[in-house]
Amino acid sequence: MIKVITSAERHTSNKKWIHSEFSFSFADYDDPSNAHFGALLAHNDNELRPGQGMHEHPHHDLEIITYVVSGVLKHQDDQGNHAELQGGSIQIMSAGTGINHSETNPSDTDNTRFLQIWLLPDQPGRQPKWDAKFYPVEHKTNTLLPVVSGKGEEGALEIHENITIYLSSLETNRELKYLQREERRTHIYLISGNLEISCPDGTFHLQPGDAARIRKSCDLNLKGTGSDMSAEFLLIDLP
Image 1 (cartoon, rainbow, N blue to C red):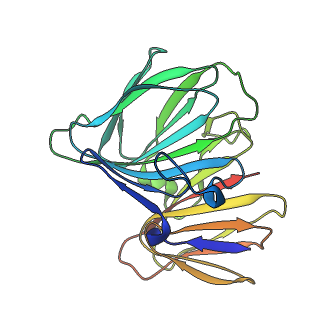
Image 2 (image 1 turned 30 degrees about the horizontal axis):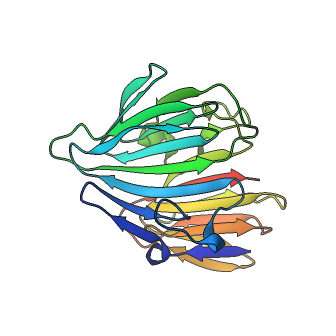
């Protein structure tokens, strides 16, 4: 089964300092029928204004993944970690028994766009940890690049959940195959460009901000289509 959630179906939160699009219930958006997809609890597409940010706040027992699409995101936490994450960077934060952190846009002129994903951990009460890595665009061009994994994928940041997150920048008319497993879920989110997903269930066309939630389906054919720019997307394999 493939269910496409269009960009327009997301919940919009527009504040003076941040614009957010929520794919699942989050903050002031409470929809019991759209609370999660397996272990995936939140998937937010954020645009943070210059000089703005989230002041220090706590988390616990969450696996939090941040992908900086453009601009710079400054991270600080009470574990002594701090970084200015450039566009193309992935950050993981296993909140475990508790971690306090802040996220800000250090630029005076440019917005920062970042995706933030919340996942349930495989078990509560783990020690907090943080890590980050920059992935050049050529590493994800016309391939599925594993960037976060709880399954020991080489080169991926490690988290405490049986998932793998892939990044891809698929040029127009280039295709990739993804072998969908019967017992797994797949979440695909299109960041930019246009993407075609096809299998015997049908053919589906995604535009920026659209997502596909896939269960008990077939092997997928992914194709960049209809745009001068590559189809940049994120694919999550999860239980």
